[in-house]
Image (tube, rainbow over all chains, first blue to last red; front, side, top):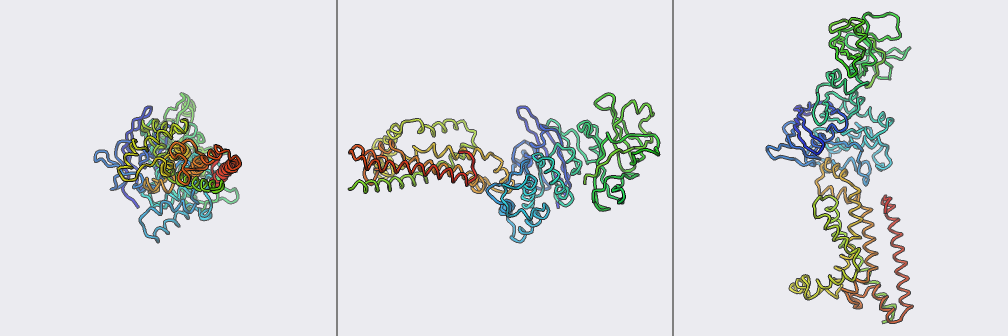
Length: 362
Length: 227
C-alpha cells in the first residue's frame, strides 16, 4: 500500500488550449478529476500515463516519472500504472483470458504470484465466467470490467480511469457501477477517475479536483467540494450534498431504511443493504426546504434541525443557496431570497430542513 | 520440347517467382507501411508518390529503367559485377527485383490501410500493459492488421503471376530462367500455336478468379468487412 502522495505539475500549450495544473493526489481513495469537456481532465490523465507529454513533473512516492529539470521522462511501458480508456479497447485478436494475461506476461514476477494477481482481479470484477469468451460479443459493461481487471492484473501503483462509463448507455452504466463501488471499497491503491458525471462523482469520489479550461478551479474532499459555491454553480439543478453514513434500522412494514445524518436521521427507500453497511445518500439542494419550526402534519417526514452557516447568491438573482449545519452533516437548500426575507432567515438562524427526497446511492 | 512441357516449365517458374516476390515484398512493405502510418515526416508524400509510380507507369518504362540499372552500365550492375556476381539482367534474380518494384503499391497500400484503421489506441493500451514498442508491434499491431497482410499477399502473388511488360524488358524470354506464363503465351501466339496459348490463357483466367474468391473468403474469416 502506498502512503506517499502523487505530485503532479503539468503545463501544456496548444493552439486553443492551455493546461496548467499543480495538484497532489492523496495516496489512498478515489480522486475524481471533474470538469466539463474541454477542461483538460483527459489530457492531464494521459500526461500522467506518459501517453502525452506536457512539461513539468510527475512523481508517485519516491518514483519519478517525469522531471524536466532533471531531464527524466519514463516511457509509458515502464510506468507501473493501470489505465482504463473510455471505450474498453480490448484486444480483439485475443480472448478474455489472454487479454487479462497480456500485461501479466510482461511482468517479472513468479508464476505463483502472477496466478494470485490474476485470480484476485478476476474475482474483484466478477468476470470468472467470461474467461474463455471472445471479446467481440461481450456487452459494453462486460468489456469495461475486463479492461479494468486487465489493468489491475499488472499490480499497478495507481489506477487511472478515463470516463470509463461515458461510452455506455444507462442500463450498462447501472450494471457496472456496483463493480466500481466495490473497487472503491476494496482497492488499496490510489485511483484517479476522470468524469463529467455528477452521479459518478457522488458515488465514487473521496477527493475531488475541479478543472475548468485547463486550470484547477477548486479541490478538496467530497463533502467540502459539494458545498463549494463553484461546484454548486457547475452542478446547477443537480447541486447537492453526499452524506456518508450507515443504515441504523430497517422498517419492514413500509420498506424504508433509516440512515444517520448529522444530528438527525433520514428515512430512505430500503434497497436491501444490510444494517451497519457503509452507504452514501445524495440530497439535492432543490429537494430541501427550510422551516422555522418542526411542523407536525406534513407528508415530508424527513426533518433535521440545524443552523444556517452561509447564504450565497445564485446565478439567477431570485435564488439563494443556503448551507445548513446539522451536527456533523451539512445540507444544501436552494430557496428564493423572498422566502428568506419573509422568514427573516440569515446566517446563524436555527432552521428545520425538510428533506423531500433522499436517494441511497451506495 | 512439346507445348505442354514448355507450359509446365513456365507455370513452375511463374509460381516460384510469385512466391519469392510475395515473401520479399511482405518483409519490405510491412515496416515501410508502419513507418508511413505513423510518421509526420515531410518525406511521407514523396515516398507515397514513389511507391505509387508503378501503378501509373507503363510496365515497359519501369522495366526499361530497372534493366538499365541492373545492366553493365547501371550502378547495381557495377556493384554486382565488382562483387563477382555477374549481371542480374536477363536472370531470375533480375526478374524478382523487377517484380518487387512492380507490385510495391499492391503490397504497401493494403497494409498501410490496415495500420491506419488500427489507430493509436491499441498501441497505447499495449504500452500501459508494459509492452515495449517493438513488442507491441509484433503482439498487437501485426495480428490486428492480419486482413491487410492477407490482402497484400494475395494481390502481390496474383499481380506477379500476371505481369508481362516488366518481365519481358528485364528477363527477356529465356526458357527455364525467365520465361513465365505470360511470355510463354506470347511465344505461342507468335508461333501461331493458338491451341496451346488458349489452354495456358484459360488457366490464367481460372487461377486469377480462384485467387480473388479465396481472398474474399479469407478476409471474411479474418473478420474484415472492407476490401
